[in-house]
Amino acid sequence: MEALLIQEIDQKIDELDKTIESIKDRQSPADTLALSQARRSRKELLSLCSELTPADRVYLARHPRRPGTEDYLDALFTNFFEQRGDRLYREDPGILGGIALYKGKPVTVIGCRKGKNLQEHLACHFGMPCPEGYRKALRLMRSAEKFGRPIITFVDTPGAYPGMEAEENGQGEAIARNLAVMSQLKVPVVSVFIGEGGSGGALALGVGNRVIMLENAIYSVLSPEGFASILWKDASRSREACAVMKLTAEDLKTLCVADTIIAEPPGGAHRNPRSVYDALDIELNKTLNKLMRQNSQELADDRYKKFRKIGRILPRKGAL
Image 1 (tube, rainbow, N blue to C red):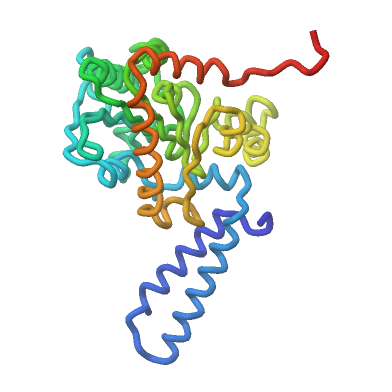
Image 2: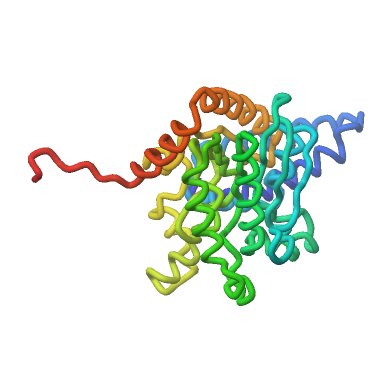
C-alpha cells in the first residue's frame, strides 16, 4: 500500500471510470475486451484500499466529491425547512440548519457546509463557519429543546474561520457558548462526523450524547499540516503527523471519543454514497430510539458523563 498512495489509486479509478463510461455501450469484440479489462483493473485497485494509512484517510475525508451535509439531508430526511440568520448580525452559509422529518418525526438538523462549486466554497469559507453560523446553530438548538425535538448535527469542517472579522465578532465566545449550552441540552443530541473534524470549530457541533463517525472521517485538535508546522517546523511532514495524531475513527473509538463507526465502501464514501446513507440510516434510527427512552435529565447527565470520561487515564496497579 505504501508503494501506491490512495491519491494515486483514486485518480487511476477515475480514469478507468471514464473509460468504462465511454465504451460500455459499444458492441465490438475489441470494446468488449477493453471493458472487461478496465473493470478488472478497477476491482484490483479498489482491493488496495482495504488497508489505509491515517494520511490516506485524511485524503478521503477531504475529498472534493465526498458527500456533505446537503447530501445527507436529501438522502435521510424529508420536508426540510431551512432557518437562516443568527438574529444578531447576519446569515452564515457555512452552517446549514433547520427542521426536518426523520422517519415521520420532527428533528432539528444542523451541519457544516463546504459548498459544491467555487462560488459556494468562497461563500462558506471552504467549510469554516463564522461566529454568526455558530450563533445560528445555538438558536436552532435552543428552539429544538423548547419543542422537544432531537438534534442531529453533521460535522465536516477544517475548523472555525480564523479571519479578522470573525475574531472581532466573537468567534471564541460563540464556540464556547455552544459548548456550554450543548452540554446541558435536555433533548437527544447525535453528532455525525462525515468528513473533517477540526479543533473547536468541530467540537462546537460535536457535544452529543452519541458521536458517530464515518470510517474515513477524522477528528483532531488541528490539521496535520498545522501539527507538523508547530512540532517540526515543517508542514511537508504532514503525512508523518497523521500517523501520530490519533485522528482516525478507529483511534477515536478506542479513546472513547467516538461511539460508533460507519463502514464506507472501498475507495471512500464518494464511490458509493448510497451504501453510506443506508448504513447511517440504520445506526441513526437505532441510536435515536434508544435515546428517546431517556428523560430530559438523564439525557443531560448521560452527555456529561460521556465527555468527562474522555481522556481519563486509569492508575496503574500498585500506584498511589
